[in-house]
Structure formats: structure tokens, C-alpha cells
Length: 425
Image 1 (cartoon, one colour):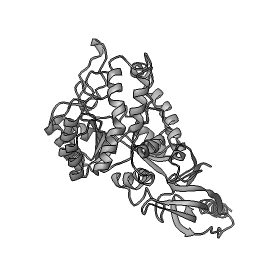
Image 2: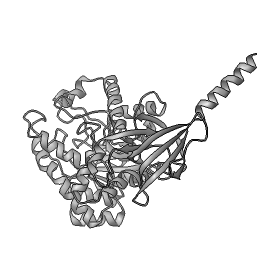
Image 3: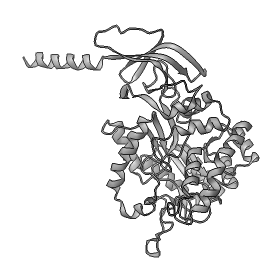
Image 4: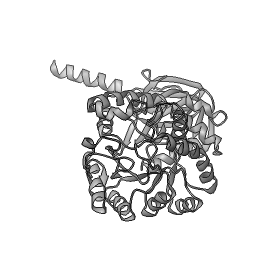
């Protein structure tokens, strides 16, 4: 009898997991070719795409299901290459690091993670937090929390007093001298140790702050903050551990040093010169423009008390520059990757970046490709993410309108599937 019951349970379990999903798509964006196809059926089994068929194909098994997306435009799950999933900037955030416990950060991060997923971003690269982002990634992978697939830097790496030194702005008694473990380096040896520590902690990628930044409680927002030998040590060590490198950079000299050292993505790129643009083309370094963040900080800096006074002039200077720099870089042929800096502005509003990129001169289809096949390649996941094709993860989203004709529809994702599970319908 026990054997019979066990066999019955196994049979029931198999029948549940064997259910396939047939997505009937009115329009389907082929991110590889850049074409918008019509009347296609995506067949999903488990967490993978089995095939993409012409026309509206009906299920072969009675337990299979159909999802009607005939009046929608369907595309691969979106990838944001620059988010900070643990937090959101607001007037309180500058004191929160002294009042919030790690548990507070963790619980709040789950809210931001779900909001990001519901906005159609099924994969993100988290570029720095307290280290809770690593635990969040594990919780999402284990199915304990709803959220995007996360590639995380853990804690960022900065120099003493640099953008990313968490003790900036603290009173004398709290002005500690953090080291590589906390993400502060002052030599090539420190830099190597910091990269190895992030690997040990479970990070996937490395993020450094090559120049000053807007939201750090420090005066300069664009000065160089890493020496050449420190940058080379970061890149060499990250390469040894198979980790992608990213550099926050507003100032041109800091960007040039980072690109020459081999940093793969330049985040923001505000005051990038034509010389640096040409260098990025030569080195195949990517610009992650984060126009959304620039617009947000410039807007909020005009509100009295929203930011500490030391931040306001930086926000007013840097914010309005990002979109114009992106236009020049795109026209000059700099490789572009999609990234928003969500967390500087509210999570879930990532889709605005598509509209800003199109306004700046990038065709709508290319903005979508930057958030799919380009970012998948940078994450070394080009055979799993960024396309709707057999063998790829079933990360699929849909909009009401065709974004190649109305890009603002990317701000209203109406269907979300990640790993074959429907989260929004």
C-alpha cells in the first residue's frame, strides 16, 4: 500500500510540473533581428522556452494552458544594469544608515524587489548596498521572495572620503577608518583584497567609484578618486575571479583612467569628452547612461531640505547633463547598455529610461535591445537571457502598445513571467 501511495504521489507531482504554457502573442519583438513579428506562439515548459511557433498553436495536452496576449506586444524580460535594490533616496535616507538595522534594510528591499519585477525587469545588476543585496539574491533564487534575478556587487569599493565611503558626513566620533572589508581602499594591495573579499562574500560583480558623486555627503562630485595602479589591481583581480567590473564616474579624467585600466562599464559618464568616447569605442567599454537618475536629482534638488545642502549644487550641475552626454556618446558610436540607477529614484519607475533614451536620439528598438541582448551579453548570459528563443529562460513581458511606435508603453508592463512563473497578468 505504501509503495502504491508513493507511486501515486510521484505521478501527481509529475503531472503538475509537466504542465506547459502556450502564450498567444499578437506581436513579438525579436531582439536579435530588431524585427516585430506577428501572430506567434511561445511554448513554455518549466522555466524554459521550448519553442516559438508561427500562428496561434493550441496545446497538445488537456492540462496545458493558454495565455491570450493577442492584443499585446511581447518581448523578453527586461534587464536593468544599474539599480540599488536595498534603498530609495529620500530626505530621511541620509540619517537612515545610523537608525536602520540590517533587518530593516532587508525587509524594505523585498518591497523594492517585487516592485522592480512587476515593472517588467526580470533581471537586474545591483551596484552597491550594505551586503543585504547578496542575501536578497539568495532569497529570490530560493523562491522565498518575489523579485528579479539579481547580479550584485555587494558593497561598492571606494577610496577614503570618496563617493562610497559610508562614513562621509559623520561627526568626529563616527569618522572611522574603514578598510577593504568595508569597501574603502588606498593602495593596489587594498584594491586586490577588496575584490577578493567581495568574491568571498558572494558578490557577482565589482563596482568602484572612480570619481566623486552627487549623493555622497562630500563637496566634489567629479574629481578622480582612484589611482591608475589601484584601478589596474581591481580589474586584474576581478578578471581572475571572473567578475564584471563597473565604475561610477562623472569626471572625464576618472573615466579615462578606468577605461584604460579595463573597466567594462562606465556608469553615468556625465562630463565625458570626445577623447574618452573614442577610447571607449576602442576598448569596447559600455556607457550606462542613467538619465532617469539625473532628471530626478535635478528636480528634487530644487525642493528645500530634500537633500543636505552640500549635495544640492552637485545635483543641479550633474543632473541636467546626463541626457545630453548620452546623445553625443550614442552619435559617436560609444557602446550603450541600459541602466537607470533605480534607488536614486523610486523603484518600479525604471521604464522611463526608454523614453528618455529615445528623446535623446536612440531608436526605440535599440533602447529595447540595450535592455535585453546587450545587457545579457555583459552578464555572460547571452545564451539564457535577452531573447525569446528555444532553450532560453522563460522571462517574458508584454505591453498594451507596440513600443517601437509608442515607447512610453514601456512604463506600463501588463504581463510578467519570470522563470516560467506568471507574476502579473
